[in-house]
Every structure is written in structure tokens, then in C-alpha cells.
Length: 153
Image (cartoon, rainbow, N blue to C red; front, side, top):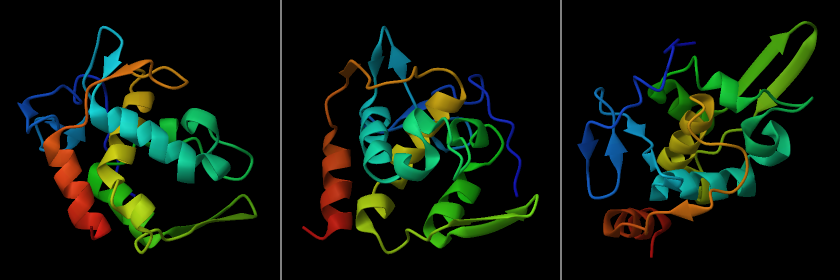
């Protein structure tokens, strides 16, 4: 597994692509100012609680069934995250087997991988508190266009 040792410093925004924020390495990142989160963090929160929290726990805190993604994202890089979500993974440790199903064919997950990554990255870095973000930026046109293209509409 790729180890990224992410931090709030590495997650700093250096580029704004119409409401989608990128770090110095070109990876999607969050922007949280005065309690207002960017659209992708908010969307990631919604998508996470729609498809991921059943196994990975509320707000990425983990469960007896699956790891705390708010911790995992501290140590995996963006390409590894994409690969795991798209292709799935099987772990056998301490005599226990955990299987992450592949979501590469599930458009409700796959079309929002960046959103999920950004939300979990913000949780991992301690930038986003638990619970629904109270305020968020408006959905950027680029996000609307990407969603329409990916979902086939």
C-alpha cells in the first residue's frame, strides 16, 4: 500500500479549477473557511453517508466491520484510494478476513470518487468536524457538468 503521510500542510489549496481545489501535487483537496466547506467536501459527506458509512462508520470513524477511513486517508495516496474503491480489496489480518467490494461499476460511487476523497481527506486532517457541514459553497458548474457526463444524462 502506498503511504502518503498526508497532513493539513500537504492538503493546502494551490489551484482553484472553478470550485474544485487542488494541492501542490494536483490531487483534489478541501477548502474550509469560516465554517463553510467547498462543494466537494459537502458532496463527499453526502455520498459517504449514502454508500460508505454502513461499513466504515459514521463520519469515517470505523466499525467492527471496516476500518476508520478518517485514519486510513492519513496514510494512503490519491491513486491508491481510487484503486481500492474502484477495484475493491481483500485483507486478512489477525485471523480475520475483510472484503471491500469493488465500486467501479456503481455510478453513485464512481462518479463521486473525488468528492469522497476530499471529504475523507478533510476528516483525516482534522479540518472537517463530525456531522453534516452547516454551510457549503454552491455547486460549481464544472461539478454539474462532470456529474451529468458521468451519470449519462
